[in-house]
Structure formats: structure tokens, C-alpha cells
Image (cartoon, rainbow, N blue to C red; front, side, top):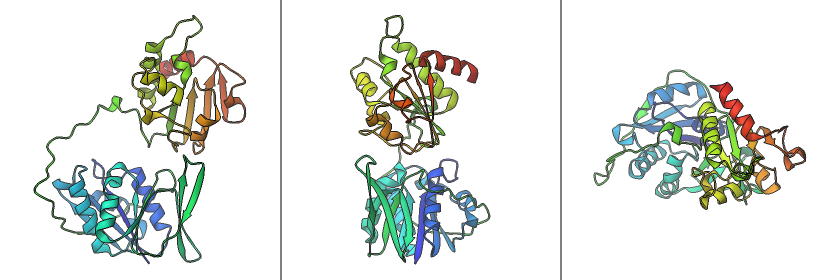
Length: 331
């Protein structure tokens, strides 16, 4: 069995955390491992994992592949997949690869399964695991067809760190002249509040938008404190559904969207640590925390849901005061 690990390089020429984890998933299947990389340059990324045990490295590089674009990314991935001739193709479920994965699978005649959280050999067959219904149930998948193209979620596999010197066979991937990158617009670093690779997840609950001890709402102060904490820690921001709904009505934090929502009807992040602020720890919200390594919460109610075994540590305190002090100390 031949396994192809397929990934794109980052802006600095290296491999991201999700890609290194996907390599770990591919390597864990056994068989002959082949690496395929595409981006503006690929040598640095190949050298970063040269000691992973791969028998072959393929690359597609050039200015056409520096920026995420369907036509160029699909052409590069197709060229690598056809050159490798692998039975299984394992790629990270990044936004860039997720956009082209289905199209590439169609071009090479492969079946595809995405956002897998488990991939292993069992009794001589590959068994994939995927969560469904907001991570309340999971299914196991097996396929007899070849090739099989899969993407794997970040946070589910151990990353591979195996630096060395790799010999990369460069491939050609013609790009249509009808498509060109005119401009790349990126938000400022401080404007990015969803950071999947952050070590800490900070979740804001409905209490930030409610009346405080003086009977008044302090939404502007809440926004300033939360953004200051994110800036100081480079944490990722999450929110309860109730606060997101308030924000949608213009009554709470203006920078929150439903993309930030964590829980039964939101996302299920996988950060090593999580801090819930002004949340009560209700079950629909807490279900989104099931893969957080260490849970802590700040709440004035000593009998809230977090105190019922849902948090490792509960700070019974005013989140406004705690976060303000924390920001001062970090500065």
C-alpha cells in the first residue's frame, strides 16, 4: 500500500501545525509513504520533515502557487497525486486544501471523505473515524476503492518533527492563463480573533452584555477588556449562542459572529486550554468543550454548571475585574 501525504506550504515556506499532524496520520497507516508539497517554495518544508521515512518527495512550486487559488492549487494537487499513484491520499483539512479536495478527487477518480478525526489500520484495512451531529456521535468508515482521498482535522494526531535534507522531484502543473491573482487582502493581525492553532481558547458568555453590579451595562468596557486579553495572549475567541445572538441584534459585542459560537449548535474546538468567562456552563454550551484539554471558568455563581464537574477550576469572581487585572499583569 502506498500512502501520499499532500499539503501546501505556508507563507514563510514551512509547514503548518495541521499539515504536520496530517503527516502523522499518514505515517501511522504504515506502507510506503510519499510526500507531496505545493507552494511558492517547497524545499524548506520538505527539509522540515525529511526524516519522516518517506521514500519519495514530490513538489510543485512557483509564483503561481504562492497564494490560495482554486485553479492553481487544484492543478498542483492533481499533478502530485497522479505522479505518486498512491492508494490513499492524506491531507490536512485546512481552508486552502478543503476548497480543492473534492475537485481533485474527481479529477483522479478517487473517493473522498473529509474532516476525519481518526485514521488507523485494523485487521489489514484502513478504518476512518468521523464525528457527526455536532460531535454527539461518530461513525467508522471503510472503503474498498482506490485511490481514497481523505482530509483530517487538526488536533487529532501527533505532529511529525523530523528535520533533515530532502531530495524533491519537481513537477510541472500548467495553470490556466484565464486566471490571475490581482490582489491579496488580509486583515490586520489584531483583527483576527479566531485562531485554530492558539494554545488558549477564551469564551465570552452572555454575562458580558448584561447589567452589572451598578445596574448599568458596560458593553464598551467588555469589548475593550476581551480584545485586550486576546491581544496580550494571542488566544482564540469563542462565544456562547446567547451572546452571539445579542451581538447580532446590536446589543452586545460588535466583533462577534456566529463563526465564534461554541457548543451544540456551534463549533467544537480542540485547544489545549480553555477559559470560560461570564458563562454558566449549560450543557448545550459545554458540549463544545469536550475536546479542550484543561477547562477553567470565571463566574460569580458558585453553583453554576461549571461547578458541577464541568470545569477543572472555577474562579468565583467578577470576570470584569479578573480580566482587567490579568491584562495589566500581562502588559
